[in-house]
Image 1 (cartoon, rainbow, N blue to C red):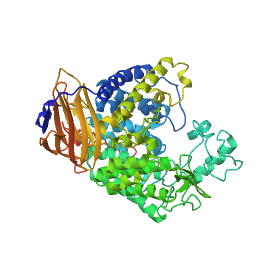
Image 2: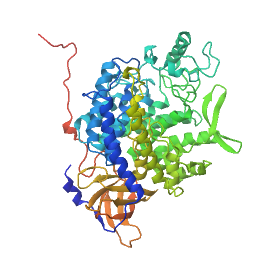
Image 3: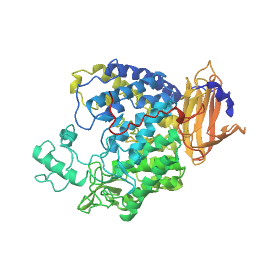
Length: 625
């Protein structure tokens, strides 16, 4: 990317000296430490060709998602300003995992042959971050379009979607099409794990306790027969996560068909919710009838209301679909489906011991597992919309004083601190930036120590081994730098009010030595603090409105300076920081006024002309004389 183009942007020049605050030094230390640790981690667990040091064969339909998850945070760290090597290391990891799991048998045509969208979504995070970090490669654009076609009804080899009925044909989908009959081999890697879970149905012979012994062959045969009869055909809300993959294609191509498919698929599920009295049904049969394969029950589907995860994974999928639709349409009304489900569960709640609890599961006997109302999903929705109605949904959740604690854990997907971040960004927890960044440094050190002590036979390692050891933890950096919570781990896109580019180096992320802290967000913009901790060199920061340029910047000014600042009028503005200078900025913006894209200040994604077209081989043709 030619860095000189950044000189044409509206530019605010900041020369006021500002000693580097602790949060800034912590950000820079994290970027440097994790950038170096990532290379060590990659080299420790891979062969020279980049494949994982592991077993020679792996059965079932699980596993490739965990391979991709091992490196998914690498391009995220890069696009925040991390080591330049992270991008190519992440690409090498994607290529190697794709080849390795193709040989194992899980992947076909560079995509999972068949699995559910909780796992497809986790796999896709690496692709989404790679595209944000560098959209210039035609291979990535072509893959995005090809993968989207598997879910829009445009790939005859993978007819996962029924366009006439506006639904997926199965909860288990992929590059080989819908998996309408599951086999024992598909589940062989999960049976021991699922022994500790509740039974998937209430009528399994011989199962009456709180758990179901999947490792008992007789019980498993009954489970599998019922799953094939009731769960293998038709659509489930979990498939709404596919909207993220189709949105990913739109961000490369800008094709209206991708945007329209996302909007229409979300609308189809909203219609099903209305037909079901407002509650989203968790299963739709092959002909489109709710409860068609479930003896008329609207609950009980794959990853549905009675699944062990209950409301949490189901609503995450709905949120991914709605948030993708809102991004592409530039309209927060696209969030209404997920809002309606949050409201429906709230209305079903009840007070127990002075605590408002909402149900998380639906069994034949009715709603159950009432738990304290969870603010995480309302916060995610509010962070995207900045709408008063979503702020009210967060405000009604009781016990928010209890969010003022930075728990000493990271959580799967590095997303354990959404609630304390919300308290900080709304003015209630001023120490949060330092606390979360120190915590991330602590856990990076713990994981590096675990890597040093790691031993044993790699063939015995669990499929989650590498992601559990990864020393790249980005939650604190994303929250403080970008002013947003981490994306939904099961396939959500990165939604943030701002992101940055190095105006001198012509690459994504903050320039070396620069820290950024989003101190407030609102419908009209953000309060942003930029600090150049380098006392010797000036730095040029390009600020973008939105992770995808979807917000147009109106004005950038130093708060309290009495000066007018600069008028922007587009998705980018530059801030020149003198050596050792800092600035408290008011960044005004018109939210969702621009077309979202993977493009940046130096150009758009790879052009369509760069895409390759294969030959159409006539039926019956063959090679040779």
